[in-house]
Length: 268
Image (cartoon, rainbow, N blue to C red):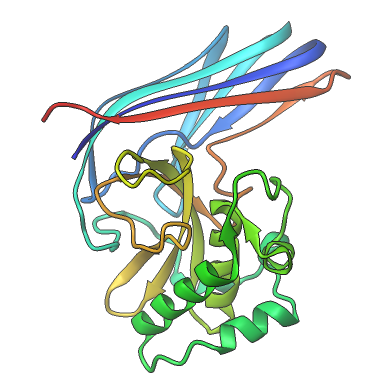
């Protein structure tokens, strides 16, 4: 499937700041699941800095903006052809060993309820166990936009019984790690045109390491594995680590952010 992406993130400051430094994870993953035809990232009044590929295979690009400035726009446009690999991430070059993805973080720290949920999965195989855990999370946390915020933990979302894709991913990661399955958070885009359900084009899911198969994606929010509707950007231990844009502003002003994302299928 050939997908077109337009992603605009706008930062507003209530008083001009002296400058902004950002780190972007905004380039599609180089893997067999997707082929990038063209991709552009532009930052208003921005200066592109250095870049590097991290141990998980993600390309990290630095940007800086000199102040005084009270508004910054980060605009991403591009076209990607995707293929359905049954959820398996194929051809991604990375050097971090899977065991490193077993460590917990604050958003994925399990409580008694998460431990109880993880214990319900009974499949004798690692792949079956991962599928069971994804289904359990989908059943336990109803998808409801606006029910949680960026700082909600997996334990809090489970106690609430509702959340968004970030909460589903965090909960699945926590449950998988409890069952000794390395797991990580994935950020990207989702083409949502056909099912009529409310979903956000900026999306997140989890990947679980299955010995002999590799990293396999699971999206509890949509009760499926990533297919040709998904564009993968990058991964991390949790949503903060995998954020497409991270940064800091120099100055006393407070920051607000607006995000607009559109994903459309183009003519083959």
